[in-house]
Image (cartoon, rainbow, N blue to C red; front, side, top):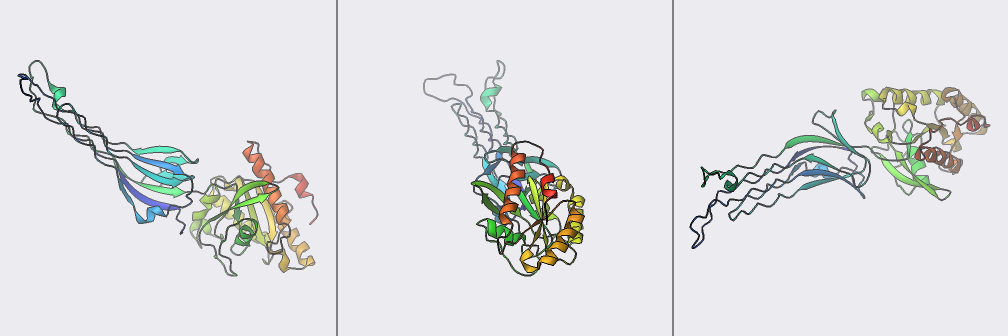
Length: 347
């Protein structure tokens, strides 16, 4: 199934049914009078966050949604039935914007949340509403009111506990594949990951969700490379795991490049708790490890972890540290980005 995190959709609620012009005509009833019923209300358009979805791919193949018109009123004071509603089912974490793609309408963050996007038009009055002492046989009825129509943007921001960031080929997908059941594409060339991925990691009988996004490069906030489009998927995370490849010639420079992109993107990403790890350490010797760890520590200001997803070196320690920050976030405490105990550890 393809991943789609943004879709443009046209919606229209149903028109109200027209009121009826009718008169009571029964044998032996001399003065029947008007008995036209009201029209039914048009159907509404709802948005609902449901379980089991993690993409907006359904809205690539259908972009127009129209609720049903209310049934017209009938004689014998019969009111028309309400038009059928339309429910747009989306994953939790979906935001809805107006046509300008800037004005936020609603943000569904929990499964089961619903929001009324367009209300159906009211049904028209039948002629029985217009009878008076001077007009006992009115021959007019109201038409139903038109429904609402609009074009909206659906934008999905994955809800995860931890987010992976780093340059292309920093080992993010390999880490995700090693600690979760996710099976992202892994290859030895840049931009292997083209779409965000999710996986559930487990450590010490506790679970949390990790989001992997495509690698960033310098100038991503201006559209370079894949750009910063996917950074929205780590906006909701409680902690960021910043991976810097040990194969980088200047790991400190690589770290600063990503930090600059996070700050340029905004939305509070630069202020999130961050755990820094030197990944792919199985590809270098002990002397290189010390040298590159020291360079990364100078750039980040905290002691980085050493990690190899291929040999599982340092994987459990990274997961436990992530879990610690995530639990603090879930408990409503202010998570600490750099615990002093972590800064003083030997490389």
